[in-house]
Image (cartoon, rainbow, N blue to C red; front, side):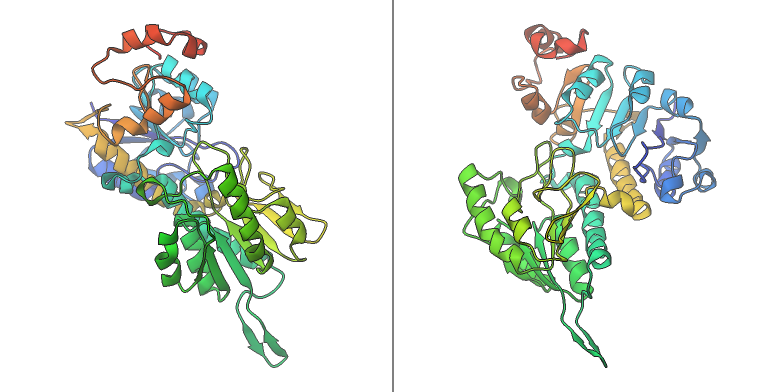
Length: 406
């Protein structure tokens, strides 16, 4: 029996879709059966007929859920999806496994095999093609620079006209990961004077290669695998004080610092916001229900301060470029599916360095070390039977009310 992959219509406000027609065509050629919920691609400008032309079957929501070996989703699916799923089915997407533990417990209770992109070990070379966080951050950084150009009250580039010369805008990007570098490159191509700030001195070469000035402070925090580590309270205070001067000199500030599963670090203090000149644009890519990088940032809103600056909570930038974002997201989904397919079946190797960490739950057990740490569970031992573990951790997971869950 062929492996069946389904993609569903996302919740209102999410414009992306987990499978693009291009990826559907490739999966069908590899003998996967693909179901697309009717209208799933509409907000990404992929009509149902494009999916059927690629070899997918366009079906109703219940059929897409019930017939699936694996359901691919962009965001965390609603209760209707999980309630209709059966033990042994797989779920793949951005599932918020570190911030919504009750949802993870529900998946474990139903023995759904859940793979969460947030858990991917991004420093493992084999995992690079699966890295949704990077692919979507690239889209977000690009869109953030365009949004800055749209909202800023003056030109971004220097303009020489018969009426005089307009000076170029100064753009500061805080955080030079994937999103930050894309924002730097795009703002530079738009003609702005661009600076990039990061607490990792090793980022200098990447920033300067894009034509921007590299800024850093006396705080250095390079963590495992080249990613920034979490700062101490003392380091955070020192960083904020030093950043204040950089912020005051710029017209547009784009912030990109995120820590999966945790509150984003506050980079722009209330004092810096209050001192910003009229017309300053703050674009907060880290804005979410957990908070943001800019004081006063409110998820999904644009806040105008008393001094005439704007704080734009732009946590959904990837969704605002849905076709390109969906294309890349789907390729990441395809990479995971290909990796876990062995001899015509979905195979979940819980001891594999990539799959074992990507798996939030498998057969009622919590697998990922990061999920287990969030649950305050002991390290998982591959040779230890899941049933023994269940008995030892009943109190930690009483909410699941089921055997086979940690």
